[in-house]
Length: 590
Figure 1 (cartoon, one colour):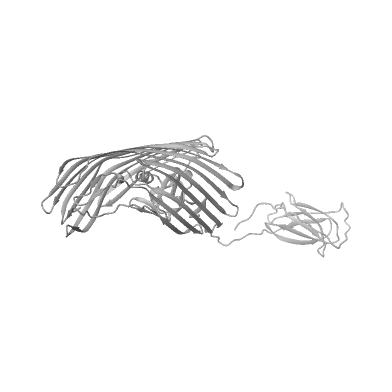
Figure 2 (cartoon, one colour):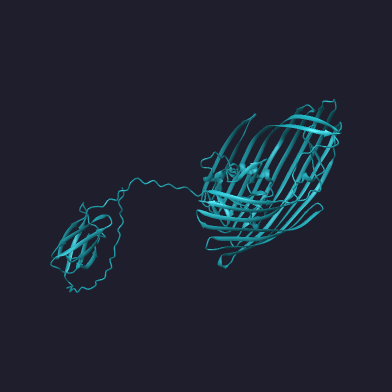
């Protein structure tokens, strides 16, 4: 039950048609309006009529409940109205209408239950925007990476996130790429709390200012806007063959001008998996039935550290400085294989560390510049011992390592033109230097070994132009073209990558989106080396020198119903496709 306490003034306008009246001005009728507790009622409307309902005058009671009407009739009718009281009619005569009491009007409402839910997904400038907090409300989610796996169409495959309908998926932070690789970025996201993420944007065709092509998940971290200090400490435990777990801690100090973030996580990693292999191997007109079981184990501590400083000169000018580090000292990986052909044991000790520094500046007039530097270093020592059923033995000891230095810079400019048009252009440059080596020692038996040292340099230069427009009808589109010059070793390639997207926002319940993207996938450093890695006495991993990049063409259409249900139709075409695949040697059992 609710009673309103506001005064609503009523203004009554009228038209008198076909009547003739003589009003003697100076003659008045007055009275007072009160409630059931004898308190004056302010703002009541009093209408003066003749007995046969002809309008004469109207007035409003003042703060003391007093009203005055102009007119004099032998008999008259008064109609008193107020939003909080029942309407009352009285008849009278003479100048004094007396005191008129109104009865309160109570607005009794039945029980009201308001049911609503926040939109699951919003379409913003052709991007599917998700609120991770809403997404993870009814699910057990420990960090930002696990929340990303709850996004529609996103799943983890072979340790990497994939998006249904997309050839390649890239995860970026705050709208800009990083020189950290997939594994390093995953480690960062696994140490980032969900409440530190403002939103996540999913794009099947990323605009060129993101400096990546194809499908993109953009993780936007929250910015500071108040005085606050917050932090949290968490721990997790896992038992899968072994007891493992870790601890994470983070805090954030922010003011309207600046913010300082620190995150640290230490994880005790212990993994084990089994691989069963059955091979019917034809060699020299004979067939060998080979069966083996391989047990893989990993044991190490992984340390991750991130600190970020953000300074806001004003609402539009910001600068960010970020450092990210990942360290895995004394990592031990082992493989024990048993079977009817050979029994082997492989031990690998690895020491890896990564350091990344990022600098970003955002201006108020559409200019964004930035860059980052990553240094990665790993050293490993591997030994193999294999005992074959025919009495042969093989063994070796190998020392190897990798050094990677990557630099990346970019500059983007965007202009808002008239009639909803936008123009953008920019340039980026990335340089990477990779030095790999491996040296074999104490080699015994019929085993292929090759000492290797490589010094690869990779350069990528991009420049683009984009055009977009938003219509009042709910249609928006963007088109762009990116030119790229790519070199690695002796390989040089010029390419142009078109991109287009169209969004039709009919109503909040019906949204249509279409996109076209093109991209190239380049083989990894180790994939192109003439090196051999030994998984056990039978299984080997060979590099393939001379691999060339494959081109990906993607068409995608999405229909979003009620900002909750997403229907997707896609087409992918990839010429020059390459993939790692097993094959049986024709000159030996391998």
